[in-house]
Amino acid sequence: MSKYRHDLPQLKGGLFLSDGGMETQLIFLDGVELPHFASYVLLETEEGRARLKRYYEHYLGIAANRNVGFLLESATWRANPDWAAKIGHDAEDLKRINRASVQLLEELRDAWETPAMPCVISAAIGPRGDGYKAGRMEADEAESYHATQIETLAGTATDMVTAFTMNTANEAIGIAQAAKKAGMPCVISFTVETDGKLVTGMALGDAVKAVDDATGGSPAYYMINCAHPTHFTQALAAGESWIERVRGVRANASARSHQELDESDTLDAGDPIDLGRRYNDLRRDFPGMRILGGCCGTDHRHLAAICEACVPFETRVA
Image (cartoon, rainbow, N blue to C red; front, side):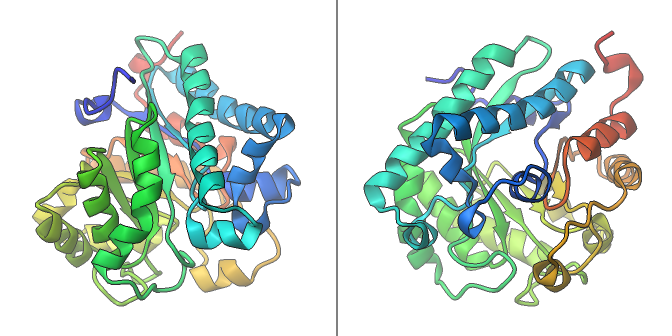
């Protein structure tokens, strides 16, 4: 059993780094074929596992050099029934794959963790449908749909689950309810459009409040991912109390809209230095944001620039 389970160090202070845009980096920079954007398929072969290890180690090295914590996020964003069926995996395959994803992260933690760099294992939960298009599930249906994956992960060394690229409050509520029943700490990460709202038109603050109201505030905290800072800074500027529940950001490298990214055949890596400055601005204005990672189009260059901009010099390892 993980020493961090139910005792998440990122809630107690300090900065935590995470990885970048796993799927976009593997596809566009490493030339890896990922059916339906499913990075979990790499867990099926020794070569694939080795590639994933190398991927994580780029980011672990950045965190180690800067004396900050690290969130190891599993390659399971697509490891749910509907997406797996498109690839040819059934329920038993998914259980094995989800367990294997955590085992890989345990190996990395054993090799890299130090007192100065606590490493937390977070299992990624993805949306049932397309993260850029609104889903239609009610909360109870979402809970039932995601429960098996969460229950499987609860039987591993997973410290927490993080639901990424959530674009409806109902699916987020269902995941939070399933995690609560499984006794698993949960984080909800919403994505927004260029206007700072969910694709449904719901304001980001209303989505956070809806999940908290429906679940008794069970999520450990909230994040924002798969959107550029220029898309969501306006939503945070309101200065309302719900903003204190947002503890992390995994932004896109590109300022393009979701539709533009979806229709593009090339990778827009944006400007890593500019992204780092924008993260520093977010940290200055919202000091409670302590989890910093990347999403589509980001790689180790962006995370290094984010650390350069955000990590005070005196905290770095010589």
